[in-house]
Length: 399
Image 1 (tube, one colour):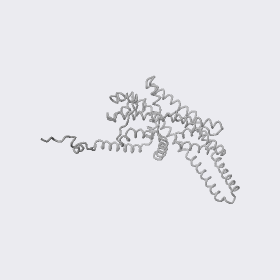
Image 2 (cartoon, one colour):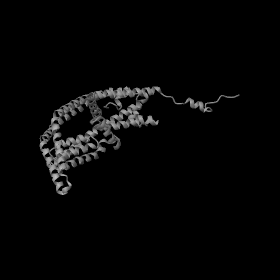
Image 3 (cartoon, one colour):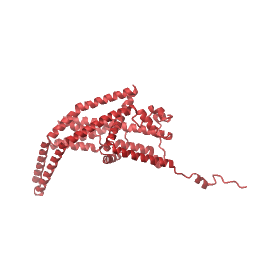
Image 4 (cartoon, helix red, strand yellow):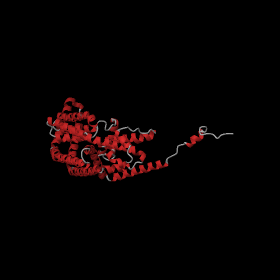
């Protein structure tokens, strides 16, 4: 009597039974998600001002969330948020009362002396032409030098006239920026106050099997964005203070203006300090070239001193290589302008999180290895997002 072949003796049937099949449900869901993302980007391109308000609000909320979280350990959350926003309002008022008027005064002095600057630039050009004729003699083409000098002076004069004529446009732009910033601060308050509900809504977008991924992602978003905002703010303030003290020591007439510029430009990785140094050299050269060189050196040295403080202030918050940061800065600036330059570092860090959490496991087939931390263990025991929202890190600002 013959027995039917077993599963072990029929490799062909076994391989046929385990042949991979296409998960059309997953494919369809991926296509729908991609279409929704494309639609959202298109809608966002139609409302840039609204998007700016929300971007500012999200950045402020993430920057204040760690402070609110620490205060919430000792007092109710609502009281912690109120204290933080009262302090923020006092800082903003102090900036507008003390720093902004002084900076505007120095701007007015600079623009009032614009004709003098043009004359001094022409004197520099004449002195350079005389030096070249004295030392190089017949090798110097006098007509070409005169043509270059005349063209340069005309361009400088035209540039100054354009700036002066655009003061009204600049004033309108500054007013719009102030309004956007004010609404951003107000909206950030509501984001922090309703962070639990926002976190629950974010977790509800993921199925049960992906809840741990969602919680890890939310924690990393809070760590990267919140740490970057706080750290970058501290570093920019330190850069501005160091630059201001050094420029005051050498009696630079535009010390506060250049210090504020240096602090703001420090937020732009690598190229910001170059921009501040070039502007500082240009303003200092209106006195003499040695003063301009000294100002540029002060700005660059102050930025290097602050660079040494970066590991202490930020730690490993970002964790992105310098080459990736440079690429992100230039690509972000080319695509999104100033916002792309400012947000290049946190965007690169968030892309790294998405890559490690989802893209790399999807491409390689190797699952993401979760670290066994206290927070993860707590989240692993959580039965549902709504039940543990207050004790888990958030995609919304966690407080």
